[in-house]
Image (tube, helix red, strand yellow):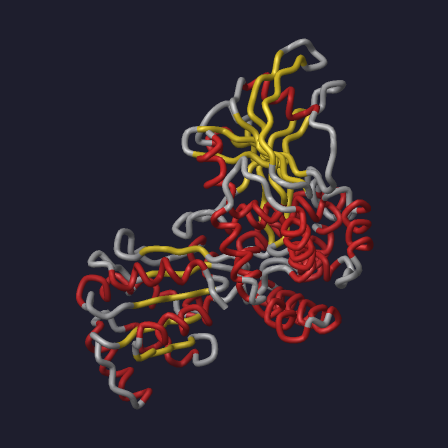
Length: 455
């Protein structure tokens, strides 16, 4: 499978300023596979150390001298390590936090050896570390589930993927091409972007086989909860996870999860799930300028899951006919549509940035309004409205654009791409003048490029 992060890693590999790189991401998003593929494509000897599978190897990295570490590792693994032709891969490094801290010495004393570390639950270590962080001596990359473009490539639809990369805003898309892309996107909506599920779908095209993979993935995540048992009861974590799919697109209220639990206890559970990257908060921002994060209200947020395929599995949805899928989206009031758009926005973030999403809400009685997502595009705030069908009211968007005096907005729906100029009075008498870029769901991954052209 082609992953966009692979090209970033290839550039890293030949960079004269290369540092040890740490790939962060949830379980099963393809971190280990990507590193192995990198070594194979570059013709490098892969020296793989998995601290979860072989915890006894952690002791080797107590040593601060890379030369001594590599010498001992050669004897343990029974293989020669040539620093110029090898790649050292430290997998599940959260199991050996001291090894993470000692990456600084590989950067300073052994720069000719490329070093990659990964960790599914590494964020727990980084959040509660008791060691000296190797600041400035390592770099980070962030990995999400597969994007729709990667899904197309995995499915053998490389020409469609190339077409998305080349599509110009304002150009006309042929109806048969649009329908084919929407059909593939509806598959993606339910299969999701977890590599194991995508691989199963590409191989078998069996909805039930994909559903079985999803269930296995969910069980893997649930089994992880036992690792937090000393922190929070696993049943509480399970309750939060199960609540997220039915609360998609809504302000997240802990009372809607379990009325018998305190908000403080539920918040701790959600914090852990977000640290494990199984869940992501979408935080309110007043959006009066950039950066959006500087205007957050952390008490107001929505929550999404890691992947739309896991959402579908938790809701008991398997691949169905096109009409049945449209009905599922309608019944969920667009929540699953918001999920997949948020997922693609995260996947489209530059790989060296830890992605964070924002939205806007005004809760004044009689003048409530909400913008599904806010995007920071260069120095511009760009609101994004997600409509599960072809049409839908844009009342909140018009008022927001008038209030903020912004120049461009995005609507995501199931129709072909268009650009229109809005000039209208809102119900409160203010004037909204802006350019509305409407794109179909399958173009969300191209949103930055399309906005640049539209602006």
